[in-house]
Length: 59
Image (cartoon, rainbow, N blue to C red; front, side):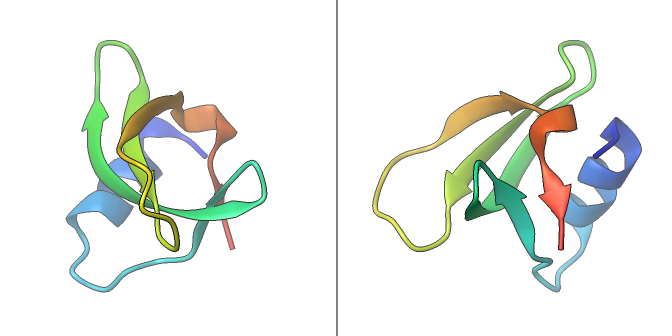
């Protein structure tokens, strides 16, 4: 995924299906400078973590 699309998904009130390492995630924030996204898994209680936006896939 590219940086602009990650920001669009983050700002959209309707949750989109985004996958990281085979699991669905919710994008909490996107950092322009580092091109990292702060995400959390949608079906797990695990906390937030940062990933490179290029590792996110929109389904």
